[in-house]
Amino acid sequence: MGENKQLKGLVLAILATSLWGINGTVTRYLLINNLDPVVLVQIRLTVSALLLFFLLFIFKINVKIGKNDIVPLFILGIFGLSLVQMTYFYTISLTNVATAVFLQYLSPVFVALYGIFFKAEEITGSKLTAIGMSLLGSFLIVTQNGEIRLPFMGLLSGLLSALSQSFYIIYGKKVLNRFSPMTVLAYGWLFGAIFWWLLIPPNKALMHQVFTLRDVVGISYVIIFATVIPFLLYFEGLKYLNSTTMSVVSLVEPVVAVIVAYLVLREKLTLLSTLGAVLILFAIYKITKS
Image (tube, rainbow, N blue to C red; front, side, top):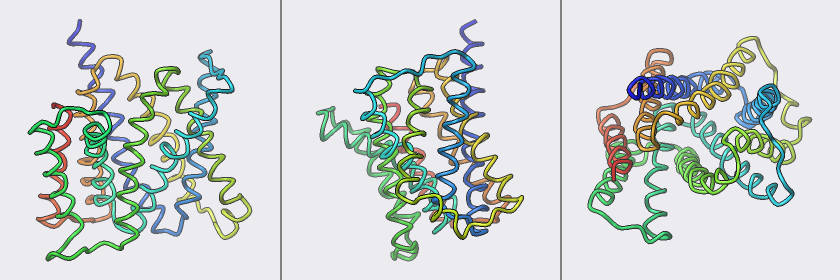
């Protein structure tokens, strides 16, 4: 019975991470066809939040929060859930899917560094090895013949994506102690959407944006199959698997992202970039096992 539950958890987690992996190619396709990353983030956060609140209402899950809960959820929504999406999309628009996803996957390394410097966690040889491998892997991905081959803003946004995801992981744990994951996501997406709409109002964001049928289909995928469904699958999988196993399973996402980007967009990794990607994946594996 236990093995069946674990298998169910693995299937759910792999489905979720695979859908996220495909999302990189869909997003890249939308962005190279003149969809603004900001507009995509605004629409994704807004519609995803509304859909999730609707599901919470249908399944009669309590979504009430107190006044003191607004600020923590607002902080998580802005600096975690929305910033990680904005920086990830922006990195994809300036570089490619593989570069964006592997730079973002440096987040476990930043989480480990946070634990070492601010939580007085033990500095083990395994952690140091993993950090060193991730740094070398990143160097191989972003450089060519010893020189940085990425646009500076692409590299900066990629690293910021990893940092914001790290913040989401660290700060999110504190918030999850008080609310269900779905409630956190619903309010996080909602507050993130409000922030971006206030920063760039609809009349400015949508002024020069023309939506084709291709855009509508792509955006629908991003909202339904890369946001709402995979998050539901992922949290359902958490019921049957421990966090370490889930972290290892999450490595499916960058692998799927690279394969789909190659098959659909013909994006290719150089030999050194491939080696860098492998080093980052192995580094994440070592950190989750340490």
